[in-house]
Length: 306
Length: 293
Image (cartoon, rainbow over all chains, first blue to last red; front, side, top):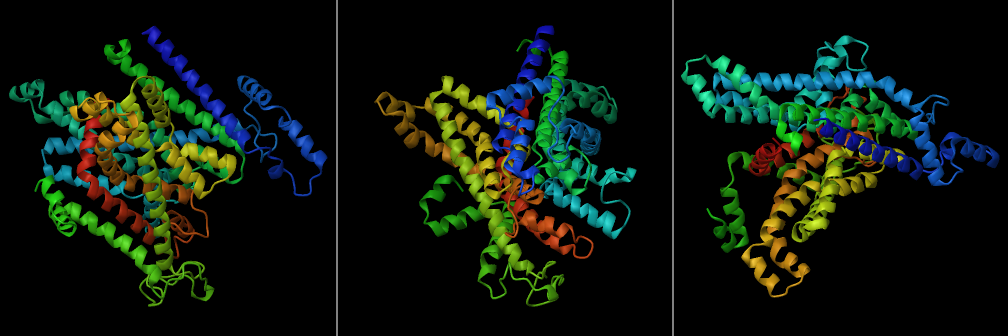
């Protein structure tokens, strides 16, 4: 187990290193930010002074080593647009908002999927299954940003129940979380439904039913724990695209998270902020994968040996 | 109806026979997609077509109130029907471009990896795994921040990153076909790898690529529309469906139809293509879910 963890941790660190390197190279692709940061009639001296201050006068390998040294010391470079403010501080300031929205959205999606599937299986109803899967598929055919807009149209503009922007009001999380949750719903419902049906055909399930246990106990108490493992694994595997989807939802609802920050940094060509954001997202993604691997190795000895 | 029936009949009869073999849901899908595509193609030939002409005195005309502007006008008095049609041509054109390029890249990579195996296979599929771990949207954000957002950047990014699914399928099929008799015989007779792949393996793989591509259209439309919406794709004044929704969002209170109409267009195309490709994707989803467990 210890060896497994060490190898996986080393792999994770190597991946982070690759991400940092790619982020650095992309940043240099755009060239010196002098054209962005100085006025049109800046003198040659001003441009040179800026390039020296940011290290753009050095050869690329030197800049790279400097950048890595800075990162080891916790310095990820200052924002181009807000002089003297660390780009990483800007990103980390937004992290809690993103994490809370992502966690609540994901949890809500899983809860909805579990509730729908358990109801279907308890009622043994084909109609219910078709309805849930049909609604879920229809939702998936609507782009997230448009679904969010429809929610705004109904609940903010027409009914006036919910605030449409920001995160000051505690109710403001309802619509972005619903947008995320409903987008995930059909994937998890279909998976859990299949996996529950499969478990239901196995001997232990038949035995339980034959013993005369009530259906609720069999489905929820005995089948569900076995059936939910693959769903949780897929939820973890999908985390990357999930983090990507968060960017869109944050922008629809002006939710002050990392995605919104990174996108506005794209518009203002504030590359260091984008760079730090990418590193944080990659680190989150890699860390969660590491945790999932460790957890499944803990549960399933076959993974450990592989 | 068997496959041989389809092959022997003349083209028109084949279309009829194929349509007869469709389920009602699949037929609905074909009808939806055809309707939207027809609208986009025909509108530019109508006299009302003027996607860029502004008329501030006739801004925010609601839909179905003015014969000259059947779908109404936007904040600058531009005709929404014209912009919807042009936006659709732009959006769907980009989707087709991305899907076709991805299918071709994926097919070539998959065929080479599957046929030759060994180190080439490891390298190509290893790279595919790396790409799968990177959400396209983050790659596009990084590139847009570096060189500035543009529609070509979006197309190139998608073309370079989205082929992995195709490559995996092509590789799998190439690996199984490689050792079948009809491929082994020419190989033993000394046919070159290029000949064997293009003459004997590629045709079998191409059908699968076509199926995958058809089921990908909806997903790619959702993706590119999101990028347009975020400002990372098509740039104004050229309209696209995603961009129309984002322009309309600012006026959601006074003129919600500006966003809702293009949103419905996206929904119809995605649900239509999903209905058409349903029977393939359902099987594939189940298979990949089983494999992952």
